[in-house]
Length: 321
Ligand SMILES: C[S@@+](CC[C@H](N)C(=O)[O-])C[C@H]1O[C@@H](n2cnc3c(N)ncnc32)[C@H](O)[C@@H]1O
Image (cartoon, rainbow, N blue to C red; front, side, top):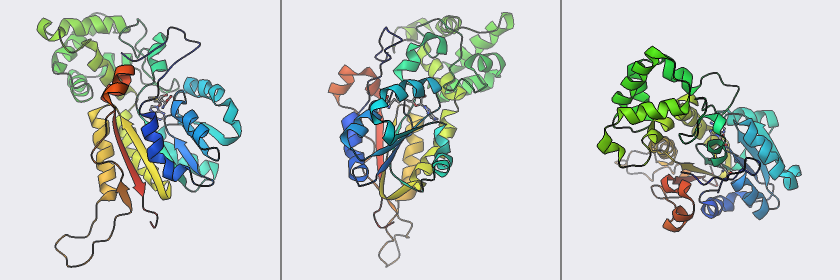
């Protein structure tokens, strides 16, 4: 489980790989008149650190969750003249910049997924540890909820998302249990779903790998919020938004997210000159800053369990691009 506090008035989220993110962005965002986008503002952990460390920096903070924006607005009070907070989905980066009249930025940071605050507020329905309506929308103005998916998707569709997005070995059995249960009554609550999942997974498998509901809950959250298709559109937009020398850092917590980032970064950082031509290859416009992906240190994982699954990738736009 993620680190949470018991108090809803003091929501907490420990920023992941904070120093590493700042070190990777620093050459770009320490420049005069630099602008950075925090595309996943959350509780502003990374944003506060960037504003604190770079006194000239202007920050655009994006979040699709209005409650995260409200909390962060208060937290960022001391930096009010240097920030613009926007309620948007991060695949709207191009529109956000056009609306603000900002042609290009120096850095973009993505810290994907949900925040500990979202997991902590029971009624949001993200947590398998607290009883609530199966909602899971990051933006309450969206229409599709987890309950809607559970009660309307076919067996095949449910099995596909639970297998692909949740990496659940017993996806088909879980889907069968859902379809059978909803013949009697709609599936509305987290506790109802947790019981169904427990019943569907063989006893031997239930004894290992943590709470058996974790994978199905993750799959539903990804489907409710279209997280992967949104990310697929967002990464190229963030690259297009960069000034020469600008940098993008992405922290993923799911192998499919990391694959999307890896593919988008590889596309712009690989030379297109055929290797068998006797000419100097044209240098690509972008350069990878991290070989493969980077994980959090054991020390960080020990103090912040959320860091366990993080995979960080970073890229820079060439200075002459
Ligand atoms: C892991 S938290 C970010 C935490 C933040 N870095 C901090 O230190 O406080 C992710 C945040 O991104 C937001 N988010 C997730 N997907 C989003 C999307 N597609 N567009 C905009 N915001 C998104 C979530 O609502 C959540 O507040």
